[in-house]
Image 1 (cartoon, helix red, strand yellow):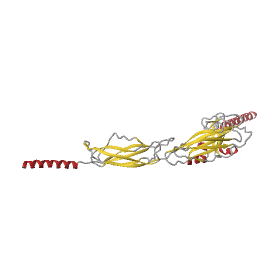
Image 2 (cartoon, one colour):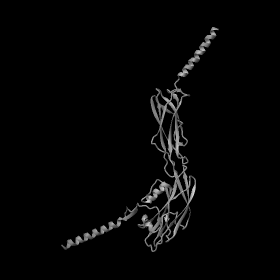
Image 3 (spheres, helix red, strand yellow):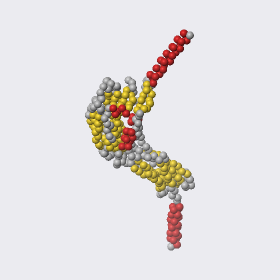
Image 4 (cartoon, one colour):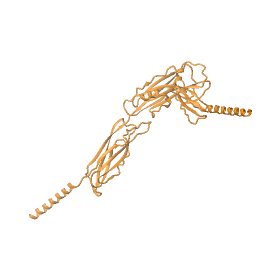
Length: 358
């Protein structure tokens, strides 16, 4: 009987000792702190450059020994965090893990959360930890709104006026030039505010190389009235039809080579108004927030083709750009230089003859 009691006592002591050792095993963890490094807001606009967010999560090991950490990122969109590798953090030190987050075009505008988790799987270089606590830190990121508008020309009253790259048709006095189009709106939010605006300008040729300047103020002499802005009644994925007409006034015996450009600008409503109020609509730059659709015709004795998109570089003789009354004017400096040279030569000849006579 005594022997049995001794055996039982020994077994109980063994169990208690093992339990005590297990309870004394450390369960290390690391502190996690994440930041949006540049405080970027995410953007996936179909027609603009993508904006990603650089995220940095610091793992702080306040234990006296080294730990091996397994990390996990919870984010429903695109990221480049490497979850297959572990991170070694020395005792009483910290290490930063950096990665990038971005979204797809179908990501709705608003706030989206991300969570970064860290779990110690080994400590002191050799000891495994199968039940260490997971620590984490979360961030909220802003997904920016985007809106696009597409124009599909359906018909026009006079062929060759709208939708080309060149002005190639003659203007007819007193005629109304109309355009019909379907506008399709896309957006990553529910209530896009979009519009179509209209403008016009008169262009004048500078030389045979295709350089020209334009004067919006001269339009009043040829177009009766610029059409008003049309606000589109269309949500994401919906379309709206528009109809617009530019009415020319009566004019006769126009022999100077010039052309009239009809301008259709469309996109987000506020940017459309900004473009229409710009000093020079051709120089208006909103990082593709608006799009342009052109039409036009020429006035003059000869049929000339004028490109809507004009450039200044590479001109000969020298072309100088100045500004007057919100119009871009180009002066040909080569003529002035030539006249100055002729005057200098004439002056030299006069002086030489005067010297001989003396």
